[in-house]
Length: 394
Ligand code: TGC
Ligand code: FAD
Image: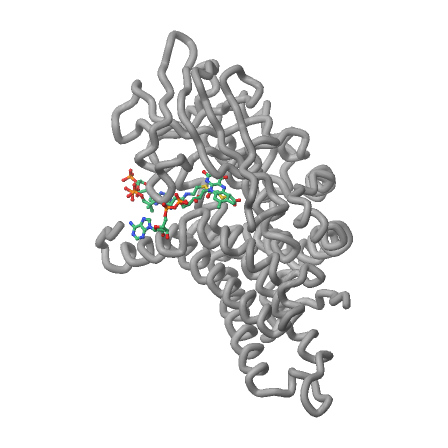
């Protein structure tokens, strides 16, 4: 039984969006409906990233969408947000790919790069001709990236990089890796710097992580750098300190906060439609039962609150007033909300909820990763806690 997504808007949320924002949202929605929905279950089963969508997504301006110049679409943050919402309504792995390309690779080149680096990479990345990955996490340093062991040693006019990065989205399909490493030629506080490492350099290896039950349509790899020589000009000159990668994470976490709303909408709308045609007891739809209605009411209430939260964060971002703790609240709340919606929706579908004829279980499994990456749920709890108390409890 195919269920077609109808959109989710309980309190005329659309009236809070401008005409341009709705147009961007509707364009992304149509693209996902026509191009991703028909193939995503097959990709998920096969553990295949739908690479054929990269070029069309580039043509629609999805990569580096909120950057200005270099062929980028120059969207507002809210417009970029509604794009990530629709991407993740399709699949978190596809949204992940776009987040990494845009927020974690193009953004640091844009914010910390030299003119030459920007001209070399941004126009090609905007079109999807070149792909990127972001290497921060290491096998022993996930939530605490400041402890990283990867080192960049200055030797003449080169840097020599050594280290291991783990759980890197798009690692083995990337042309360039943004690698965060400690240097010995800066003071301790600023010693973490970003480097552009072309992935065909000798000593660079990317190996895919297999056996994931989550984000199966996304490539996840481990990276090994053994005496990788890069020109000193590959250093991102304006990067300095842990703050630099954290600034990139703010961009990506913001997109995730919108994306999670998309995943929740997909699950809720599917469960609502199913509950109206699935009949049990007295030949009546399960939607007529109070316990089922309670689940639907919970979901639509939480989705609505999440929409308002992320829209306000987006408006603040567009006014350059957003703080990183605002983004943490939106990421933490919205991903948690989406995972709860996925679990409740799965339950409403009964046995059908575990089949990939419906999108719900895939979203649920994907959201388990989304809850962990870009700062776990609990790390964002501590970021909010630090913000309101002034006390660091990490
Ligand atoms: P701490 O001493 O608190 O901070 C170091 C410096 O950074 C500043 N800062 C921030 N700046 C900008 N944005 C933020 N969000 C910032 N948070 C902190 C801070 O003010 C300080 O500045 P300064 O001038 O004093 O030097 O650092 P800490 O070592 O105590 O760690 C803080 C903590 C735990 C919040 C941080 O390390 C953290 O966020 N951990 C989570 C790690 C994480 O999110 N990793 C993500 C890896 S990438 C990924 O998952 C991609 S998934 C891809 C996909 O979407 O598919
Ligand atoms: P840990 O840090 O070991 O945490 C384990 C548990 O301990 C969590 O519940 C955590 O909340 C808790 N914990 C840790 N510290 C504290 C504390 N102080 N107080 C209370 N609880 C605490 N990284 C990249 O750099 N680039 C990528 O592209 C990327 N893509 C990813 C894709 C996928 C599919 C996944 C799953 C991860 C990806 N990551 C990426 C890594 C991701 O950012 C890390 O997994 C995440 O930051 C958590 O680190 P960890 O897995 O090492 O968990």
